[in-house]
Every structure is written in structure tokens, then in C-alpha cells.
Image 1 (spheres, helix red, strand yellow):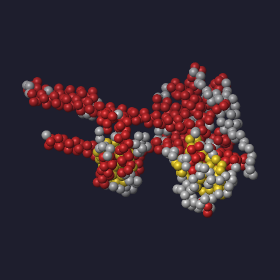
Image 2: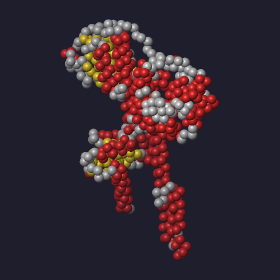
Image 3: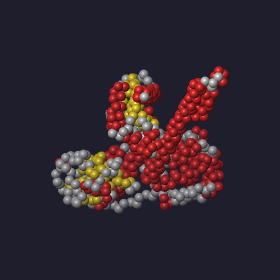
Image 4: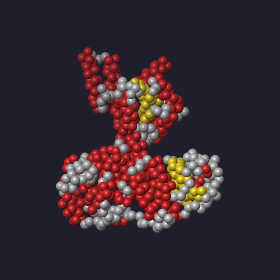
Length: 609
């Protein structure tokens, strides 16, 4: 009981136990042996209470630290999403940030609890995230939208909801982002919600969004004076806006006027018309580029984006071969993700494998390193040329441009044509425009991939996190006739390592343990950092004995690092256990294994004595 409850309760239990056990000393007379036994009982009980309280406190502190780190990571993710939206429409970033500040102040005056205030802030920051999927010519149109354009614009709340729904932490923002354009009288979109059906966070953001829009310069009008804005809100109270929200917001604006920085010079402007050149003319090229932008707005796969870019390039530019080389995650290598034109005899031996290059190697690597496009009349005799192994030396010309987003090279596009001096500077400019079009889409796709990975990965070890692992276990248990084992692993003496050498040393131990687990499991196995110094492995198709062999393999891999582990296993067969039952059984086996080791150690000590 002392170990199960907190220290104060455990101490009280210890005192009560000692007092009760001491009664025979007062009733039957003093007995030294019995008195020593009572003292040992009291001290042992206090120790149980103290140690368990310290362990509980340490676990709570670690949980709080991890939770804070995770929240900081999510906040950084939200900032990255806002930056991605900023690349699509430069006005939006300042608008979202200042709308969020105003919305939080309104929420505080409405006495929203801290959890709702946090959702309100994040929802306001991301309320326009769905505009990533809206074509740029609509976002940046210097005038009112047509009915068709407005119909496309009305889709951005739904797009925004889909974007945030894929991340567990951001998923609660989905209904808020979707309902941000709903109106109090039910005439809003996309679902026509009315009154209290609309989430309070969405009602606040809707009002603050409208205020900031009216108070800012836009491409089609100047900012409205504050008197006109107040009059508009009073007219629309009870129609477009929640009356209670409007009252609080107008009172706040009157006493604490918000700062508006989204002036005219921050508003996205249409790109000037390019000079007409060549038989097709730049106007036709721009139409193709615009159509490409609409296609890319609906694509989130990097492979699909590169394919669409490649198909557009081959339709616009003369070529015998086109390559799109994607920058690797470690930023040291360019891998080919799109290759077209190998049907020509001269390019028949060119493959995805032999055209990959290191950064700085060959012309593509040189373009990535210098971050500058190039038009070459004779590629084979260029100082930076690197001949593709296994192919013949031919006369060819090349266009090569980097795909860059926020000063970071994401890919390199290469277009080749047989013969010397086949390309012009105008064609290089056109390819650069296409590369810029691809840059935002590839950056957004990579961000979405990282978000998905962050939602399921432990940041320290690179293994699955607990939530993702539990989901994997649930899916495995639902499969018909599934069977296998769950292996729980605990790293010994991690707390002592942290105390003696600091938490960085402890983190290094956990990373080595994760590396040993990754190298020891099979391709179908799922490994996770469960909590603290515990790891879990789901191994389909093996029994408990084979799971023990797997644990031994991991232990052997850790011997060179002087890291010791203990483990417990649990088998599952079909639907005999639920996922929670399986996890509980493995944890119990782990605990019993620890107790068995402790008993063996005591026996060895007793024999030595």
C-alpha cells in the first residue's frame, strides 16, 4: 500500500502500521526481538513509499519534458506550414499571424480555457492553409473574382481540413478550419452551418479574419477606415457574425487597437507579361504554365509532381532526353526520379542508376552546387562534364536549371538534344519558370511527408512512437489468422547513466539500442520506443522462443557498447487477445523477468556469503 500511494499517504501508512504493530509491546511487555522487527517493518514501509514516490516523480517529469518537446515541435511545424503558405501568397503570412493575435485576445475576453485558446491560436494561424491548393492566378487576381473563380476559392476550407487531418496533433483543427467561413445565419460555406452549430473558435476567427481583411490594403482596394469597419460589423451582427464575439472584439479594438502590417507592398501582384519570343510565343507558354500550376495544386506526391513537370517540359521544349534529379535528404546526391527519351540509340544505355550524381559532380551536380542555370552548346567538352559510363561520346546540347525554394536546392532539371548549339537563352528562361513552378509544390510535398513522419516517429531514436505502434498492433490483431509475438525490451541502468554522465549520455545509449534493434529485426517487424528506456517490437509469424532468440541477437549487438537489456515476450494467435491484452502480457513478462533476475542475483550473493 505504501508503494502504491503517494509519499505522504505511504508515510502515514508506515506510521499507522508501526503504531499498531507496537501495541503488543505495551500490552505484553517489552521484547527486544519484536521491537527490532517493528522498527525494520516501519523503515521498510517508509523506504517503499519514498522510492516509489521518487520513481513516480521522475516518470512524471520525463513525461512532461517529452510533452513539452513534442508541443514545441508541433508549433515549429505550424510555423513551417505558415511559411509554405507564405510562398504561395505573401500577403497571407502576416494576415494569419495578426489574425491569430487578435483572435487569442478575443478568446481570453470570452473566458475560453487554455486548451481552446491553443486550438484558437493554431486554427487562426492555419485558417488559410487550404489556399495552397488554389491556383495562383486566382489568389493574386487584382480585382473581384468571377463566379467560377469564387467557386474554386470556396474549396480552400475543405482543402485545409484535409491537410491538417493527416497529422494527429493538428486533427482537432480540422472542424475549425472547415467552418471558418460559415455565417451566423447559415448562409456561409462549405456546410451552411448556423448559430451555435459553428465551433466557437471558427466564429472568433471568422470575425477577426474579416476585421483584418477590411483593415488591410488589398490588390483591388485600399484599407477601410476604422469607422467604416465598425459600422459594417454592427450591420452584420446577428447575420454574418456571432453578436457576442462582435461585442467583445469591437470593445477590444476600441481600447487596444491591433497592429496591421499587411500593407499594399506585401500583397501578391500578378507577374508582368513576358516578352513574346519564338514561333509559339510566350503567351501560349504561359497558358501551359498556368495549367501546370492548377495540376500541381492537386498533387502532393513528389514523384507525381516530377512526372507532371517532366511531361510539361517535353511538351514545350525540343528535346531528345529529359531528366529530373531530386536532392537526397542528406543533400549530398542527386537521384533521377524522372527520365524520358531513352528510346534513341544514343541514349539507350542511359539509366536511372548511372545518371545519379554527387553534388558538384558533372554538370547537374555543378548546377546544384552553383545554384545557377546553364545553357550549353557542347556538353561533352564542358569543363564540368562527366561522361555517363557505358555510353558513347556524342555531340549534344543541354539546358540545366536548379529547382530552388527559399534558397534551398530541391532538384535539378536537365534537358538534352543531339547536335551542337541547339538551345537559346529564351528556352533557358522558360525552363527556369517551370522550375520555379515546381519548387513550391515539391517543398509542400516534402513538408507533408515530414509531417506524416513526425506524427509517427520518435524524434530521438527514429523508431515508431508509442501512438503509431499501438495503431500498428491494433491493425495486426484485426488481420484474420494472424499470429506472432510482442517483445518488450528494457535498457538496464539508464537512470544511473543519466545521473553519472548527464542526459546526453543517456540519449546516446537509447540511440545505440535503437540502432541495434533496427539491424536485428526483419523487414515485416515493427519497432517502437515505448516509453523512457523501454522498447517494443511486434514480430508477426514467430513464437515466443524465436522472439527470445531475437532479443538475444539484439543483446549481442549491444555487448560492444556495454549496454545490457532485459526483455519479456507475449504471443498472440488470431483473435485470442486484444491489442491491450497483448501489451499488458508483454509488460508483465518483462516485469517478471526483472524479478527473476533479481532473485538469481540474491541467490548468487547468498551462496558467496
